[in-house]
Figure (cartoon, rainbow, N blue to C red):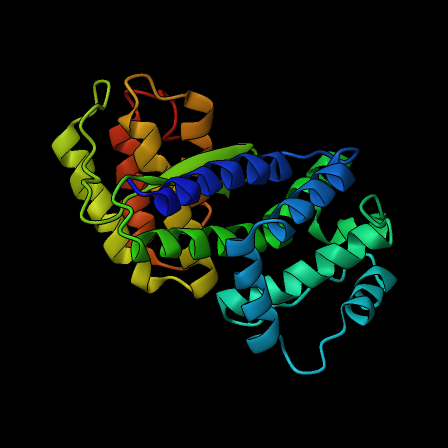
Length: 273
């Protein structure tokens, strides 16, 4: 493996670590985690080039991060809006997070309440915020690094970080260059049936909204990794399945999720109820 590929794999590992730290942050640690993550991506030439391209070519005309933040914090239940592209999301999220750190608003309840999803717990507000806002930048940066790896012919599996409610940071393995994604170790689960239902789940993604499709794709990728383990962690497995179960805009998809639940019941008794 040449030096450029080695450096890219090191960058993937470092980004995974930094992103995981951000996505697992709590109310009192959010400011430090955000500052650390932003400093990290600003210091990496590959990531910085991606961010600069997003800002130059995909930022909505006239966008003002300070004005946007003022609008969100003026009403405690207002949330940020994003354009329908990964690059546009990254441009806005990057600028917004920068301003939040600069203005010391990481513990602003007016900022976080819109992401509380009905909870009154500060940590739940932060979890909602990092999942709904910061995760967009994390996923975009990871995508940029992964695509760079594909261009260089990096054929080993590469790692990305995804965040799912109540599960901390779930690690999902992406494969490139035709690597297998077949699940073989299922700890009592019918492997053939499991691979069939995973395939059906992925086929039924077409019936979902773009936002739910992204959530489901990430959850399925993480689920594959968890189910490859000889002893899958029940808490992570249940959280991922609940993430899929919570998506309600596709009848075929919902049916496949329930079939999946029935298959993984040997690993997680009581998951279907």
